[in-house]
Length: 506
Figure 1 (cartoon, rainbow, N blue to C red):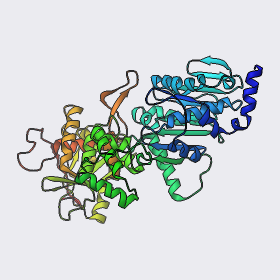
Figure 2 (cartoon, helix red, strand yellow):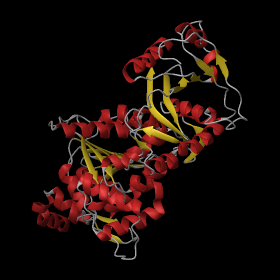
Figure 3 (cartoon, rainbow, N blue to C red):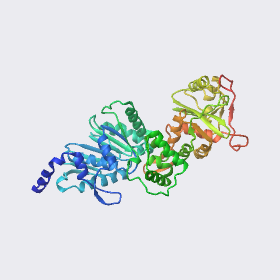
Figure 4 (cartoon, rainbow, N blue to C red):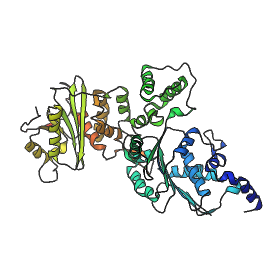
């Protein structure tokens, strides 16, 4: 190091020991307008900096700069600490390359020369500095030890590639010691997957008032309305009845009182984003996860069902027949409970379980008769009810007869696309009980296409996971339910299984 550089550093010694000062005075970035600007933490980034724990789960609105802040935080930690390892994980290789180029290399290249710690080893997406510290940006991490791990858009990773999300949790997380730091951040992608699970655990811990230990994730949420930029001065914006109710509900239920300018911004933005508004710019954490995930087959239908108020409290109508719609799998069985109510189908209940035989589900149905008064018509079983066993040589159909269950074996749908299209159309007929059907509704939200990581597109093929079971049972309902004579008469006729009646069966 030459004398000039030594003199520069000597003048900075006191301030350089303060990381918060360094983060706000040393690093240059490219802003939204494409201009080179000095990085200065905004209010959201500053709140996160002071809230960060050993493990932090960040649920965010768009465009708050959390990725930029976290990656500069990781770079800074490497430059000013010996033997510090930072790992940054992105979903796809192009994303990792962009992060390295814009969030690591650019801020480093634009440092004062005296502070550019020499790079000892340079590999693709990885730098090792002369102080033994290293920063790496990739799509995974399993070997070595990390003092800081940042997972970018964890929610999208979990939605598009659930196996990869599990690999991150079991691999990369385990590379971080108890005194290290993990920060995962994302917009929400439905009520499923590892990101949702971690956020929910963190929220429950927060609600309990218990102090987190070093392995607990704490929860950090940044709502859109905390950003002063999200305002629009337009007195001509019309606030319709739906938006008036939405803003009133925010005020009454969450004490969120928006200004006219914020309301105008929200209404204008929603015109473009539509059903994605609550995911990209949530007002509350629950609202963020309420929105269906990208690639979900029923995302628009579920959003409209919620807007129309058809996910609510739906009472059991005494004396009226309850029909059950089944998906029977080797791993999980799903059952929807419905009652006809005029031209609506009231979906009053849902049950799912894994690892049990048919007697277990017969017991569950009978318990609902005893406690809730359900009186059943014929069960609506999938086509494979009569040709697959339940862990032995006895068919499910034969076991149903022995147990006294009544049922119709439904025809096999021609294609999966037929069931999906029927399901989309059928939502307008349904009213769902929000509480009793919560698990099934989560499945309908999460039922999605497979992701092709090679081409970066959604495949026209469903992902087979836990959400497939409630979705398949619902599609059976959509295909084969008849409201009255003359409706759906062109569909194949179900095969009736004749069995003896039992308590709770009409």
